Length: 592
Figure 1 (cartoon, rainbow, N blue to C red):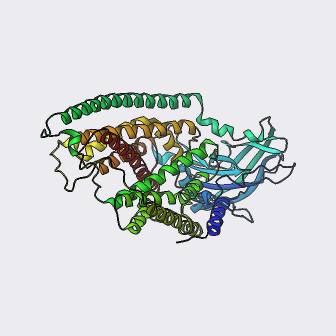
Figure 2: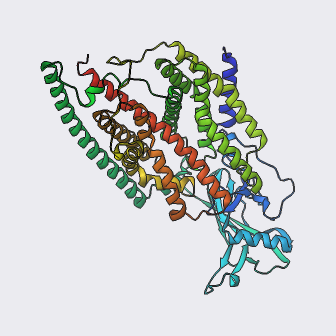
Figure 3: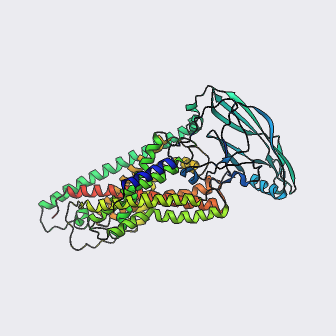
């Protein structure tokens, strides 16, 4: 199946230009006094429910004449951004004092709508020259009142902008709501509201290139860095103790095993073999469900490659704060372009396992991760449509994603699969496999799959759980996370601990004369994903204030997909480490 190179190049160019990982429209405009500077209203929503956001004018604010939607990149739409021209006019270096931009009589329904929004701590988000502005739309007066029916609800009607500039460029903007200029929303009655805004300009020495530093620095404050470094030290100590302990134990045990087996060979030939050497004729017997196994390795390898690329982009500074949608764009584009790796790995390994139906294996590889993700997306997008939230993807965006999957992901998957099938690599087994499998002796309960998975997942999870809180607070909250170097170190530690614990458990399994280690090593390696999902439950109920059906379904739905991805990726790491170890120990002894 030949895919014209021109077509692939064209699609790749469209993806990168239209979706722009590095924002092409990131503003570096120079302005003269009185020039119009772009100000866009983005969205509103409950502060504690980051997924539940709505268009700014879904609330009954004054809608100015000629409201225009801003053309958005793919990543921005996936992020739930819906930018429209804002009602305020903030021209460069033009100050305004309590200027009225709208007088409006709020109907009873509009008062009730605003009151519900204030009760749920609604915030608004805008962008001025690509700089973010946040603020709450109102406040609840609970002072010395215990009964919620006595609470008073107020809408802010005066916003004060303070803008810093350096020569002909905008450097910083802050918005403050005037606490004395309020509209009382407590009673169900019509209310007159006069919306105003004030604009003050101040000069600053901060250069344009450093204007985003204040957002990046928020996650690098001393007390945060101390916790991050404590997390790193904690993880490193865990790794050193674990690797040291395992290396010492395994080296001593293996050394004794090698000496024992060497003596056995010199002794009488009829002496019965025991331990892991006893199953040398079965240890490389191919696993059950080999097509699913190969597809899991292919998907896991692709997700591992995707993670490495994302880290590379983050370390070179692509994902700076408020680079709207850059991460989503990168995930979609890199996942599409790395599908050939999944196809090649799965097909190659499947053929090594003497599989015959490589086409079915390729289809399974393509749907193993995308299938559950697609079903989850369909359900959650339906929920978002029912809520009229900005998280609901427009039909045009869905068409773009389907086209990327059809024109890029699928062809590359097939090309990778064909290359893997034609590689004609043979499985490297240092010992011959017998015709009939040995019977596995009965083992105690703690040597079964689930207890082993619990042991295997706990240690890698304990090395990353401190950093997990900051990731969750960034993805499912409003905290900014920019210390990718520390996160990369934690990721490397996670891989090392996963590999070592899987190797150790594989050795103990083989020593107990259980030769079905293939799936067990994969499940043990991937079990950290289950621990991360268990942490989701703890985070949702103990560390966050999220509520409502939409936010709950988005949190647990998409986290299930992410944890499933971790399961596949770390399972692949665990199996690859175990395979290297098993090949090494059986290569080191003489087996008939």
